[in-house]
Length: 190
Ligand SMILES: [Fe+2]
Ligand SMILES: [Fe+2]
Image (cartoon, rainbow, N blue to C red; front, side, top):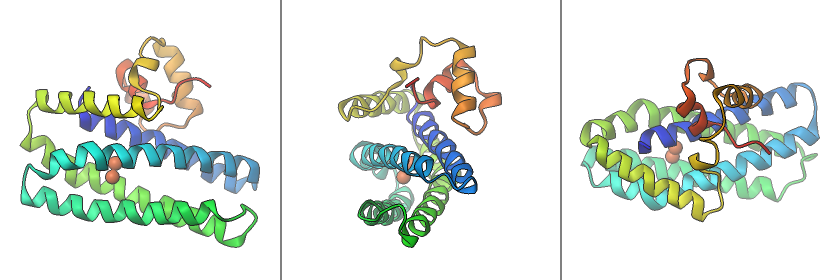
């Protein structure tokens, strides 16, 4: 699978969690907010790690401009990690808990948009499909090594099953995704 498609699918899965977190916030459902917060942390921990350990080092070698964007991206990851650590030490009833999580979500939204609008198009222009597919395979291996779900866990589900999962998980753009895009994006059934 293309590395950029894989990372974009990760972004959309997290965006679905953000949408569900917002809904839980509107409903004053603290238990749901805590559970979704934990899912968000797990997703972000795996995603930032595979980018920093595998994808960014590869892409940084493509051009000075790409390297500069990635250097900023690493610092954006750093802010998110500091916030995750601070949030982890707070009780969900503490007033700072929601404020910090809200800022974390805003930071991640901004960072993911920058990757998709600036970084990924530059990388796509500077690489071949075969190179991106090989990088995607490495990212899948990294994910598996970290105990995270991979495409192989979901590819055998029917399109109808995937659509139901994508709907429940509030995956943005799901109505225009084909079977394989849905499979790459959804979290497997619990
Ligand atoms: Fe990133
Ligand atoms: Fe990313």
